[in-house]
Length: 367
Figure 1 (tube, helix red, strand yellow):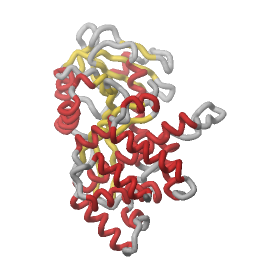
Figure 2: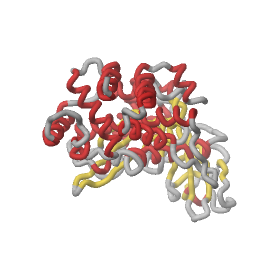
Figure 3: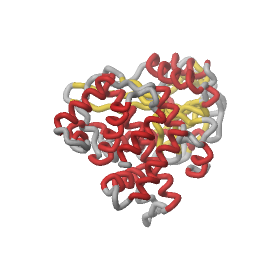
């Protein structure tokens, strides 16, 4: 049985309503992503097996993206099957770039896990620049509709994600949040007057932080404010719905969604190489990348338990967990005959995730 046949059988477990030809195309597409390290369909078409011409494979890929639309809740369920948590720390951010004059702009909600974040829901923004409150609420509502607010430990976001209506929505749904604000944003003093946020933290020693006494009025809401002065003159000022001693430690985890974007782009699948411009097709491509990313991380986590990642002299890992798995999948796909047992293990790890055996995932991802 070939690697393609095995992968097709595995994917059929999760996409049971799809016809076989479509699942085979997804199998070829996923293997091609790892082999050529790019989302460029012309490059991926060269990896397809069979006697057909490369142009025929390319047209097959075009039809796939024209016809296929993933069920977002099905993909979300797949992603969380990799994550052994009763509740989730969520991170909200955008990734965007230009394709000629066309703006590719995704708003992404992710689950923070150790050194990275897992994409769980996303939406394409047909415009340049920031998201608006309606777009953020619609995205978070998709999570709530499927998992409930009880599954949200807290929400992390950067300075773009502020506003009166947005904060009201989060508070009305009893969602704890840690969101950075701009240094010149007005907050109330104890006497009721307003002052720029940075003024409250100018006298702090560098790289230390403190929480202001009592909640302060910000965007029409009483919120808790924690701030830090950085050596480069910048400030990290974070507002929260309730008091917490771990605001800065929690907020630091927001950076993990940036690590995710790097894995989808230059350090993994080179998402920015796409020539797709249609919203539906771009969302389909994002879903495929989400599956491939989760698979790579899952394999990397297993490999790390068998052969730990080498630590450099400065005590930083030589590779990320994602890249560790990404490289191994590429290696076994290029050498299926020499790495038969390892290939079976790599495919079995994807099967385990799709089937969702939580007891195995707890072994792979110790808390």
